[in-house]
Image 1 (cartoon, rainbow, N blue to C red):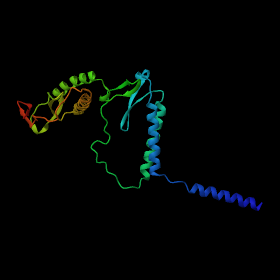
Image 2 (tube, rainbow, N blue to C red; image 1 turned 180 degrees about the horizontal axis):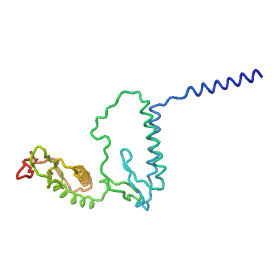
Image 3 (cartoon, rainbow, N blue to C red; image 1 turned 135 degrees about the vertical axis):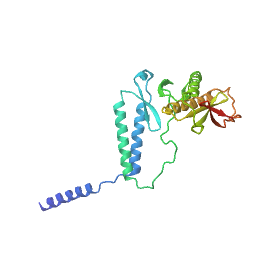
Image 4 (spheres, one colour; image 1 turned 180 degrees about the vertical axis):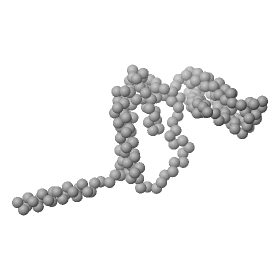
Length: 231
């Protein structure tokens, strides 16, 4: 009886000691687990049939875009929630040196051009995924919009006007811009244009353009309430 009592208290003590020595969270382990959850979420978005195109939505997943289908959206959201929780826990136990983010756009993602059926699979298309004919059409549509975007803004102070240089085939095109309530719209269009032109330069082997602008714009003046580029 005495031996049984001793054994009972020994086991009970072991349980208390084990529960009191719970393994501490590790930043590296938690980060690795979070990354694994994200990779699992990405895998759910791969190999979608082109028949699923109309039912998918585009999601921004850290530094990429992915097509999300209703059939796995719940599991996808659950994995991302678990990854976010793991990353939050990792930050709480992080004991390393403070790391300052000095990048200009840490969350930058290039513009996308919708979900496309590419090589019999669904993909959120970048400019480089487009056919040259579509690239040329999009460039032709965007350029006049960019050139006239600020036509209704009067020029009273030339220091508030700036010049962005775009490319049309081998030609350098100066575009005037200034601050405006919907400036983000202009910025998005200009970003699309630059990515499309870059994709065109890769596909169109007939273009043999110099990267040197022989007639760069020097500045802006106001003339009759309108901005004017000086050379």
